[in-house]
Image (cartoon, rainbow over all chains, first blue to last red; front, side, top):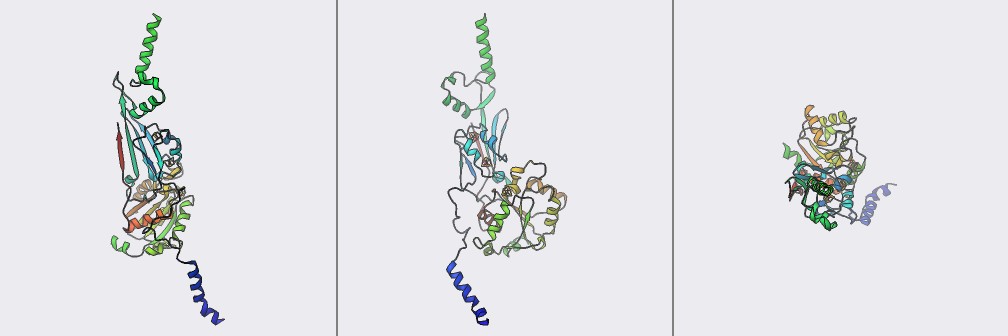
Length: 170
Length: 157
Ligand code: SF4
Ligand code: SF4
Ligand code: SF4
């Protein structure tokens, strides 16, 4: 019995040797990231057009879209993002990609914000800002015949249409 | 006083403020021999009175609020808080729900009303924050790694 007790540490040593070292050296070593892992999303500012589809699909409203007279502002707050990837699914221009970045720790909440400001383009007739330039380009790509009236705001288009119709009546 | 306490081993207290348990499991993961945070002298303690750092998870529900305030008051100065997960950082999916405070930012104002000061808060986003992210957050507090994120503003014409 006592001999067994004395030998116990040696037994443990042999078991430990069999298992080897399992502890990873992170943060002094690259983390183990599988291809399926979803991290922070990255919004490509050269593709985004400020349509707000992503903000509509985002469950915790980590993506928020606000519209003022001059601009459409897309606000991404990583601190609330649950890395679900729904925004990347719905984005019509493919501007959102899912990265595997997870080292996001910070002492200042402001560091977790990404803000995209889309300036509105002005109407050629009345000068009122009405839609983002990227959105107009996107519509043009899809509907070629929109070329004639794409630079006018909806009100000016409506007025022009009414004018045409009223002239016909006479 | 602040620097001295971070040079020594830091003891952590795990405070669940109504989290879904996802982040708690990841904290337990970080404590296993696979990640072995005792490399940095980090040890889990059972009482906030022994702790240097509070691992706070969850969106702080109204039900837990008084207990959370009491627990934080019991932590000796300097007090450090690691806000883990989307819930603790910004309220997560429940940020505008009727029964939660909605993250540490709002919580800080309530703490000020109760005269409980927190010396430093490190925010660790993620849902759940993976164990490496939690270790990264602690390493940031200890000054072993540098911050990677920064605010970005892009204006598009
Ligand atoms: S869905 Fe895509 S294009 Fe639309 S606002 Fe979001 S990122 Fe921009
Ligand atoms: S990944 Fe999910 S939570 Fe994060 S911004 Fe996209 S839709 Fe919102
Ligand atoms: S951040 Fe996500 S995993 Fe963590 S407590 Fe909140 S809902 Fe659960």
